Length: 339
Ligand SMILES: *Cc1c(COP(=O)(O)O)cnc(C)c1O
Image 1 (tube, protein in one colour):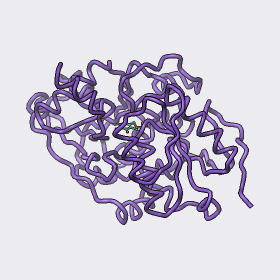
Image 2 (cartoon, rainbow, N blue to C red):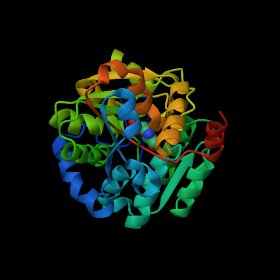
Image 3 (tube, rainbow, N blue to C red):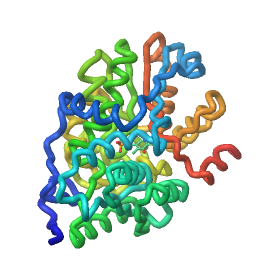
């Protein structure tokens, strides 16, 4: 018999199911995810960024999460979650909603552990990311204009078909897996003073708070687009209400709803939370390409943008941030090159 699941009441405006545990993960949970990530994924290098170090008169390091399979950090979480998947979901499989990188993460992990995967994406999803998910043998469902439309469709299919819905943030195991990047930063750069983390749904920043924030003296600073500030408002006002403003061109940051698990961690642990304009993100993409020949998605340029805006404060400090993803759509790359 196929298991069917009805949604249960959620503290935020997304849908959660009985198998979603909304207890935030701990630093110990991240340590316990580390052997899984080490077994299935390569360790990512931490590399000094010469041009930004010169520009800021600081020691700036990049955590090269773009060197992971799928080209983004999220696969750490996917592999950790699917490696521990309950037997009852193995046949029916997984479903997720994504603008691309979460989907690639779940698809990669599904292929690794031989579990079928369906990914719901918005109609205009980045075609390169969609092709990558198809190559990883995921079934793709295009639905709606935005990430949130695709998310609602995935939630409906999960209810109807009994798929295990892999939430992009309300998943302690996924957040613990993502957090392993921070343990590597702690090992490689224990003297870090300032760590910038992008914030979309907050899984990445939660992981860095529970590692770099917990285990070093560094300040962990979250950076979100001013054009999609849902998590920022949740953090500053303590509300889990959806935000009407969601117009960022950085697809990795495009959510209008804050998520319960990550909001709880960030409210308790994030030292600061700043907003940057999309134009600063695109300038960051361009400069990283021009000076370092590193290809970043706009979501990933949050660290560059925030660091450049705080030049005075950072002088003399040891600063780090992740290259969270390299899956920039070709048409967007072309406009960066033409600008
Ligand atoms: C998902 C994503 C982010 C944002 O991460 P969250 O954990 O959702 O806050 C940043 N950069 C890239 C490349 C991403 O794919």
